[in-house]
Amino acid sequence: MRQFFADGDPVVIHLLASAALDVITPIAKAGDKTTLQDITDERVDPLYLDSWRLVRKEAYNFFKHGGAKADDKLRTFRPIVNEAVLFEACTAFGTVFDDAPIEIKLFQFWFLARHPKILNEKGLQAPNPLVAQLQGLTEEQCRHHMAGLLAAAKHFRAELSKSM
Image (tube, rainbow, N blue to C red; front, side, top):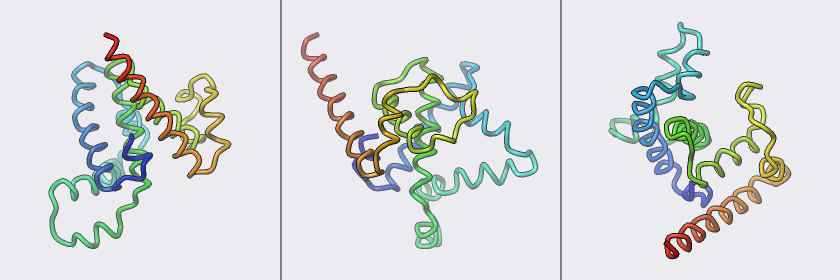
């Protein structure tokens, strides 16, 4: 999340988020837990499901394995996909472990503030004051605010570990 809010390398962010999702998803399935991927897969027409999965994983597979036409793949890669992959990974983490670190929760709040119509009534939780506050900011202000919150969370965690 820190890389994302600090405008880090979008390819690195994509690889890390996708790899996290690759690790968390089998753990969720072994624990008989439903992930966001399962829900999405249920809602895509079976006729298009294989294509949907291919598009979703295409950039990750290319970045992971490389191959011919690297320039073409990099030109067509859209960093905005990272937002969805990170949200899916964060949601899966929370599902598997029944809770999540503050960094994950902050990203989820940011995502919901930036994409308020992405979830239907079932997916929405109680209104959150942070989400409402973030919705009033520009993209740059929002990223700056989130980077500050993440830095504060890191500092708090360090201070807490010193006292234990």
